[in-house]
Amino acid sequence: GLMGQQEQGFKRVVPSPDGQHLVLLGQSGSLLLLSAKTKQLVATLQPGSERWGCQCACFSPGGELLYAAGQGSQVQVWDVRRRCCVHTWHEQGGLRTTSLAASADGATLAAGSDSGAINLYGVRSVLESAQPAPLHELLNLQHPVSTLAFNHNAELLCFGSKYAKSALRVLHMGA
Image (cartoon, rainbow, N blue to C red):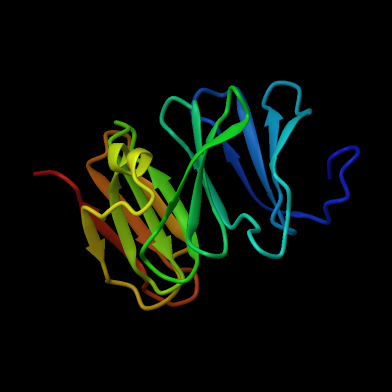
């Protein structure tokens, strides 16, 4: 645990690509920003709550933005340097966003949901609209998406579900 925090445990640790920060997703839904160097708490970006507990998070390729999603498919965009929410948008895949991933080139954001749907969004449209239209929708899984990851050059997207056997897919993003 963290000194001074009453958190019982953490669901996930998300490192920033620039190596400056770590984000801990608490069991209660809290979102804790830590210094990667000192492991000290820098800020609590979203306090845990019944209404919007954080389910998943990912950093932008430069580490300056943090995308965090909660129960109602509401995704918040946080400015890590200023430690404030700069935008909120609604993901259209299902009732709950379960996984997020940002491409290494910074152009695409993938969001997986509890229904098994994965939506691909242009980052520009996500930052400009509260209801962005997905560029592409993938309906290959029938279980909640637990894994989403782009490869180093944003050419491949790997997605899967830990709730079913043989539920891993790879999408070629190239033209």
